[in-house]
Image 1 (cartoon, rainbow, N blue to C red):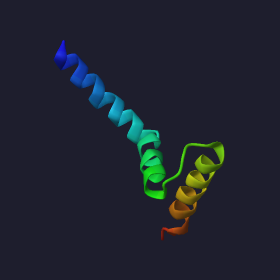
Image 2: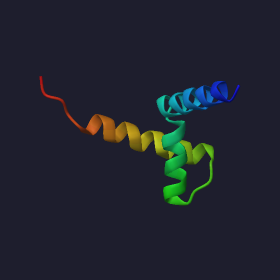
Image 3: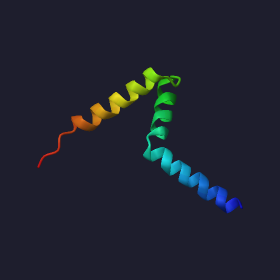
Image 4: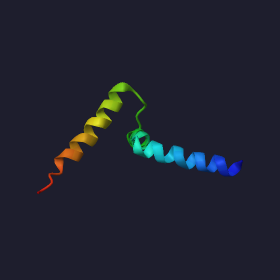
Length: 58
């Protein structure tokens, strides 16, 4: 039973990383902010800006 719980925690951790939920939680801790719609918007805009600012060549 404990093994299933451990596997479940690992899977949930992976899903949180893939969905940016963990990155958002780290963002909140780093900036001392609380969850809000406005803070989520800032987080998403920053990540998208950083992603598309790095131009790829050919």
